[in-house]
Image (cartoon, rainbow, N blue to C red; front, side, top):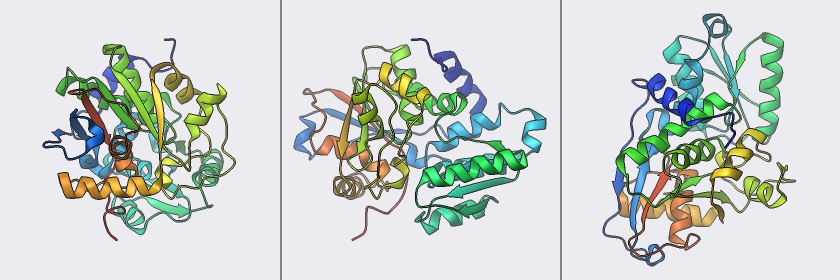
Length: 317
């Protein structure tokens, strides 16, 4: 595949971010009490235990460590509904650099508090990520800040792809990897890494019914913009992805399935009850797809579902 990101880029990212991010564990789900798994051998890749609480620290630190001194001195800016924001705030903290984060309205208060703890400046702007992102881009241009895109940056995608390397290291006989899709940086990086090293491994993406950005783009065979977002899961809800992510996903992701908000909420509760895993709704998306039979599994098929973010938004109530 001719790609702006290669397996060599992902291998280099693993070396670059070593020591600044956690190598997260995989945890086996046994015994299973979910008929839809069909006797499969289910494992979870616990990026919910990553520093800052999600995989986003990987891409942000990789981006940080590719900057020149002159670029770093300008300061960092990004837009995010939460997890990428914390990743960039953390990158700024370890680099001793100012970081300004634009967030959409409705971002949970605990994520705003986390940004402050890492020393970042948070600015709430617009109802969805796209509006916050436009403000961040304008700020970058006006004030010369270095913009960290949450998903449409080859360096960020390579950082997220290190998860795929770790999965193959820990589960060399994995049959299927399941990954949530928001803008597509995580899924593109993971799928690229997995397919480059083990082409026969199936990669399944999961999106919300209320934000099927890549699902609809692949149907249209082009990058499309959704007219509206109806999911409450803001971390999986850009109206538009990017050509970079689309091209990689089109070439490497075997299938995309959809889950609704209540299925993600039920899956988050299941993860807490059965596995003692505190996952935010986006982090429970892959589990929701499995528990609700969206992904056909053969008996004894070894599956790794990425739990991409920590949280308690789906546990209570």
